[in-house]
Length: 491
Figure 1 (cartoon, one colour):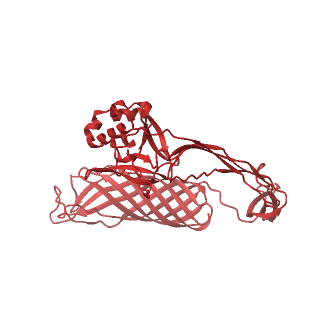
Figure 2 (cartoon, helix red, strand yellow):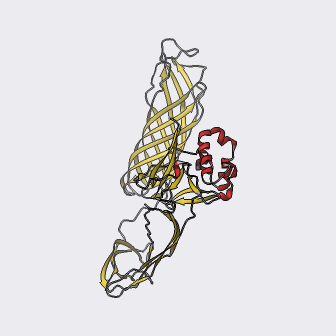
Figure 3 (cartoon, rainbow, N blue to C red):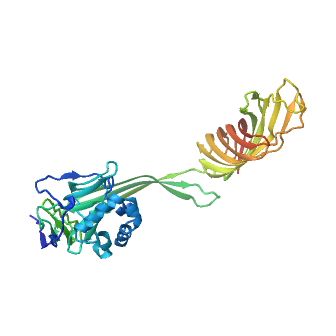
């Protein structure tokens, strides 16, 4: 069965006003009918002919066109360009040039892509101005065409000033009346299509469930049933069906006015609209479900449902040493010190928990700075914190079940509180102190744990703790590396 789409194009031609009274002394109006136009695809604005009329200067309305034309600054800043513009106005009938130009003579228009004509340019380096015969198709302009100001003289003579570049443009002609202003209308009669065979969607869904019959928590109580979805298959297929829906193909009527010259090409592209009436064919769904029940005995294992955890750890800690800018000062490590940590956290699920923790860490190093009262030619022991207590919020991710072996990773951040700071030299405590103040701290911890039951377990962890504390004379950026072993209690 054939379907036809009827497109009726009605062109109503209106002849543009004759420009026989134009002086045509400017090369803008001289068109060689035997010359082949070059294709112009560059962006406009590289060689502005009349910069004071460019859109980037703020020329957006006819009133602003008149304002910038009659502004003395335009003549002062662009004397040669303004002289050329004033001569164009005289060519189209303004006896006194720009002085006779008013808002009624300026109209916002659009030049269609592909229009052939003379395009002006001005080269300030030489300086030189001229016109080139082009097929205007610049990059970066809108879909409606190239915006331009159409300046019309008293006798109907006119030319364009393009918004983007401020250059003059005049459509090409083989004679005075080769360009016509026409109105084109597109009309498309709706076309209805009744398909004989259509693809109808078929949705197939298969679900597998597992039900657990759990023993009663109380003696002589009723058993509980828990159902869980194990697997679901959901797919969409199609099959041929002779029951379809009517499709209507139509387009909106459109009327446009345009100027057609010798080399103009008219392309009318109406937008088609497809209406399926009551919508796409209804889909057919097929759902299959199956449930398998498992009965658990009273002696079976149960899931740990603890909500809180307390962790107490102890061990040793090493810390980094500062590197002063003064090359005459030498520093070295002070060895290991005792470290401890207490953490309380909320267990949200078997793989994530978060809480607060406090640690006991000693930060110290040795240097050979000659402090007042220090023993000569010996290293001094500088205690930045003896101890320093970081109080932090942390989050911990766990890999493994609630019982037996599991591994975890923690991130923490908070504030460090130095309890005591001092400098020792030769077994004596000096009167001078570093003057350490509290500062931000952050940490990263990795560990393993083994839980004997839902309540008790042991854990081994290695962490890196960063401290950023200021003193009276400098700022410390130190790392502590505690290695601890401790117990875990859940409730």
